[in-house]
Length: 541
Image: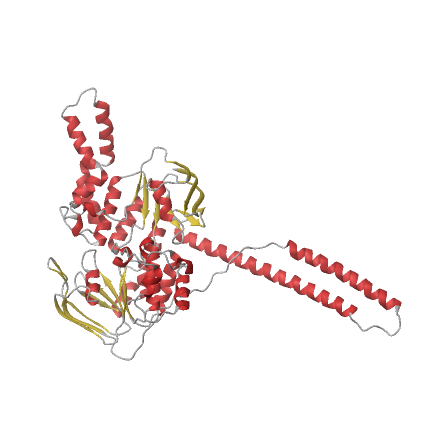
């Protein structure tokens, strides 16, 4: 694939500015850039799902496919196997082959051969076995005749991934493929893609996933594309070294300028001191001539130094800011513990095993389990968004929850950002509000934007900012790292390190869980509890 001078603008803002690159054989490219840099826009244009303004995309006859982000609600009544067969086109090919085989003639032999080639490229004779192999690898536990609408968010992601992999395109476009996947599924996908002799472009917030697959980096910044033939972690090291070199160069440049300015000032002061002496009582001609000569010489030296200063290189460099995101912590006196006794939660057709768990204030809890085992259901039950089926939940009288859910990201509220952040508050500190938003690259000018118009990454940023405005002491975080760029992730990592309250988290981001450093790991699949001493022993193995 060859891309030349690709351009795309939205509302006068240039997102892609003469973007050019080549995707060579077996290139596994990591596409990086801050939220809003244009990563998803570029992938949509390459896949043909979005029109470009100008430029050329030459696929050289190769097929290309983009990972879908959600399953259309109109497909919810399809079974898993029918959905996959329909979306990969295998069902249509099977029907055409049967029809042609029943009346094969010399006239339709070429058509039959073309369709058979497409069928064989999809490994059609082993297709159902391949479905089972990939879904087993992704740890999908539902039956193939299960309706799509009955699946959890993570299970739907697995179906979309399986559909993409089984489509067997020449070029894979993977936009956040690990979102909502459990760890075993991420490791399977990582291993599968790394062994696949295919071209691919990957956007992901999972740094370890990127490093284990990528051999090349495409960096989008201010509409421009920079290319690095490096794996991901090596690219990060390179960028850090480049930053430090530029910082040293900038500091040396600044010191040299300051030194020149100091010399110019000293020369000027020395000259002025000579000419401002009190007038002699006598008309000392010799003294007067000496002063004039000194002034002339000094002026010449100042001019020379000034020209040297003007000629010095202007280095355009912005130093990194130490930006921290603090969650507004509530530390009122009172009981802030959570005690769960014989809790059974779920629905009529789905129940979680009884939960017995004591969470003293300040404890960090990681809720683990395979997709579809009820992690989000448990969190929603704690919040009373779902009624418990039986058992008891004792929540301390001073517990103040701060919650970010997967559902919040897709909630299409038709209100402004400002209204969303302030509609439940009696007093509003606008200065604090916009200082926090600015840390997440959301400006004061964006305050009237509709929440529903924001990208998933922007919505996650808004909800993280909202936590900082609310006084909370117990965080409930359901896949909080999804859709965030590395810059925003670092803010979250720092905030998690510093938060003094209780954290109950669902996350499959390996770096996030390492930084969380849980006191308790609770596997909701089998009710197994692992405490910190045991966790440390496991990590040491």
